[in-house]
Image 1 (cartoon, helix red, strand yellow):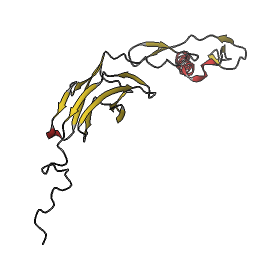
Image 2: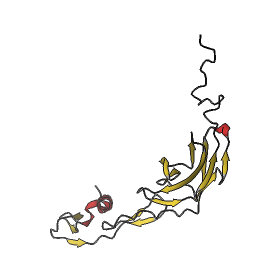
Image 3: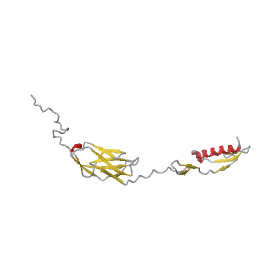
Image 4: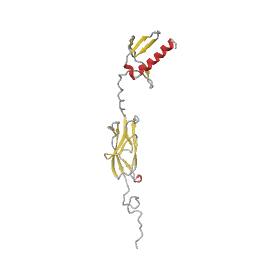
Length: 195
């Protein structure tokens, strides 16, 4: 092996070795009996070499320096949402009888809901829909009368970060006493006289 090639191989090995977790170990340089420059982790007759941190290319586009003592970057700051409201149904809206107490609840969330954040829906103060990564919920079989809807934004730790202004919804339902109502327990019974 030629001297230049050997030095190149040794240099490459040093770069790889310096980038490894054992970077804290000292490196020594000496010349062997054949006049070859040798790098080793044993002092021998050589002199210590202080290696500078190597430059590592960050795949995201930046440039970072190798540092074995660098602490892990703190978790990215939570996104500040500019808009978090229920857009449908509208406040004071009446849900007609024909919908049988079923309504789709839509939210406007700006910026878009972040990966770790979820939304839960409350109906009359009680959690009706557990936290999900969505901006649309479907409520069904709401009883007739007035209901208060409110959505909450829950972070990765399960903490409620934001709440929408409450929305009041009025639900009309056919009475179970009406013969045409499918929920009427007497519907479908024979009206023929017993004899």
